[in-house]
Length: 347
Image 1 (tube, helix red, strand yellow):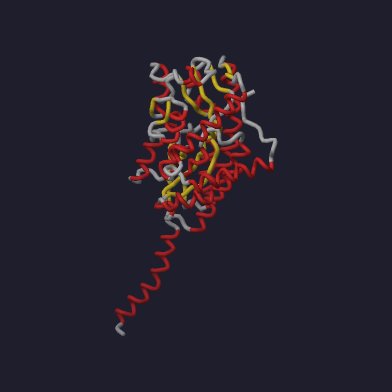
Image 2 (cartoon, helix red, strand yellow):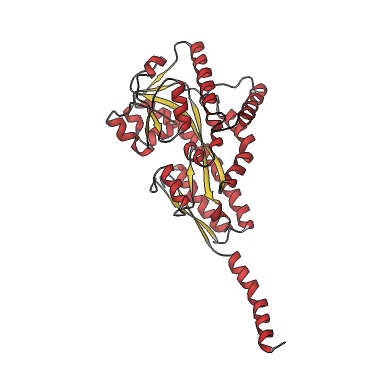
């Protein structure tokens, strides 16, 4: 063996571990977009999360968070994730459904009565949903609950006939919202989230549905005089990143990050729940009146009919019958153990 060959072998044996170590410790910056302002509750939690991630990964992983919707709505964020301009986003129901449609099985109208039901059923489905996201090239770093959705109008909607005369907003490209409104005989106006406030001012629309926190944050509540007593659905949120960027993080740091992000998302859920309650009081103080059903039994029938029609419209397309049956079975299981489960209505 020549001296030159021996030298090459020695250098290779010496350098390979160093290269592997360098790759293992390569710094990763995960770019995440969110609609939430930097100074909001969730913004502060995300900032704290970033600091903890940097500490626990020895500064090898950090989050680059783009606050306040600078990357646009969910549609824009998803497009930018596809071309790797950014790596992730804080996505709500519609955005999550664009990646894995079946995740929206728990967003069916009038499915849940309260937060306890939401938490129980979604906890049973989380592993299955996370696997589906990974199969599509995405990683769920954490789930959170944005809150229950209420309808806001300029006139008191006390019957389906009155509702059909309103110009309701539906998120652009959202098949679940379209199916729900069609089940009521309503043809909504499809718009981007960013266009709602302007469209309310120009009367392109005169009714919208949203969690109270969103209605206040986006100033929609200043355009309405009434809101419903009963919620229609619950909005699921998720911190989503591409598998491409996730695979650049070492397995050891992945475990640390998942523990931190899931705790952060749990705290975001708690914060949103409290802020939804506060937002309802803000709207009451602003003069918004609560519309209550005149006949509870008729309203119960209306709720059941709406849920069934929407399920029938989406089963086999957005989600399978098997997944729907499993979801309903988990819900029935919870209600059997909690016969006093009550509706999260506004008092």
